[in-house]
Length: 384
Picture 1 (cartoon, rainbow, N blue to C red):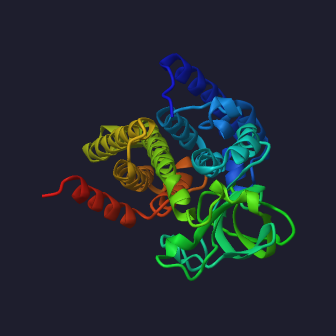
Picture 2 (cartoon, one colour):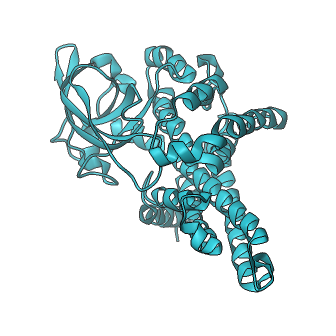
């Protein structure tokens, strides 16, 4: 991926900022409270090109590098984290096609992904399978010129509003090692593909998370990404580096928003005759919070830079994801404590930030798994 020129990056970020101030910020509280899908905002994100942010220009996308993309995600998440999920899951699906798809698949799908005409995401997780993707039970059985899919996927972002998903299945359930029996398909909604229910969540509202059921769902053979069975796990994991950089950038955005709220509130709230920002106890909190936010931002930029250079960056992405998402949890909690009783009220933004942050330490691989990835790579890169 190419890195955007400074002038181009500034122009894009300015356009996103104006969209957020004009069309998002005034409506977030009500939409989030009612858990309403932000359809009008999605149409404006299509016009901005966000659904093609990382898709090459030859297919109609913006062709942005990971560094610029991470800054967009941070900016969006500072205002409403849910919006970033609507285009991020979609772009990971697009990345799988871009990196591993056949020429025909790229020509057919990437332009429609880039325009936002065809939107969707990843369908990996199952009711009994989260981190251990090799344990998926959804199967695709070859039948004539296509496959018949049966199984269930859960916690699928964009599951209701999306129309196309990168679907991870077992094409050979008896294969050993297990990953050799896994394949990734592009599955567009049709007969046999149903949304069984919307999943209610603590936070991350507005974006739909759903359970998908496949019952004798037929899918053409030319929708097998790469055209060859047995590479599905590698194709799915290949997109998770960018996904983890995205989630880390979301963490920076949420943490920055929580810090901004705390700095603002501490200057207007008074106790014992002076603003609480003048109390040393509050200053200690603010100093720690600000340092966590900036350290997280630098880790994200470092991981994104490695990704743009085409280097292996699972350790760097894991570090960024681990630190930035933990920072989002810590800073949002500290901001709530600085707000005191008001922080527990739905009238203040910090309450939403506090509910959104915990998802980040779980999604795109738990932070416990990130620690293991970091340690294994550390050892592999420094043999004795």
